[in-house]
Image (cartoon, rainbow, N blue to C red):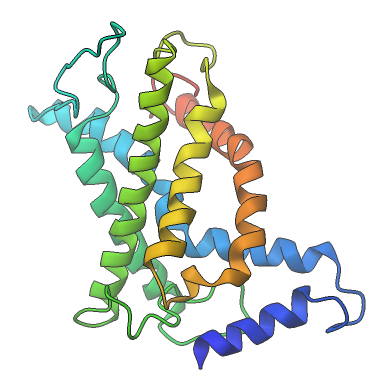
Length: 235
C-alpha cells in the first residue's frame, strides 16, 4: 500500500496531464527524495575516508585491500587509498546513517514529505530482519558497500590507465572518481532492494539526473573536506 501511495504521488507530480502544468520542479523534488533515500550510499565515501585516515592514528591499520600487489602494467591494483578499514568501517557507518534517517522520519509513509522513510515497501524484502532499525542498518550498510565497490572499480580502471592518485590540485580522472560509485549504488538498489521503494522504476529518471550532477556535488564536498582538514587533497 505504501509503494502504491508513493507511485500515485509520483504520477501526480510527473506525468503530463495528471496535474495542471506539471513542471520540472516536480522532477527536482523527486530527485531530492531519491537522494535522501540513497543518502547512506552517497555518504559512504566520506565515512570510508574518515576510517581510512583516523583509525591508523590509534595504531590499527591501514590495511590496503590490494595488499600492495602490483599488476602487469607496473601499477598497483588499487593503491594505498583503498583499505579494509575504510571499506568495512564506511559500509557499517552508512548503516548507522540509515538508522538515523528512520529515527528522524519514523517508519510510516508520509506522502506530504520529500523525506520519506527508506523502509517504505520493504516489509517482505530479504533485508527486513528483526525490526525497523536492524532492517535500516542492513539496508544502509548494503548501500554503503555498493558505493565503495563502485569507488574501487573506478580506482582499478584509473590505475590501468596509469592515472595514479597524485598531486594536490585536481584528479587526473574526475569522472572515474565520481560516476562509478553513484552508478553502482543506484544499480544495486534497483537490482537487489526490491520490493522496497528504493527499487521503484519511478526513480530511474531522478537517478539519471543525480548521476549527471554527481561530479559537481562530489567536487564540492571534497573541497569542503579539504578546507576543514578531513582530506589530504581537494578531490
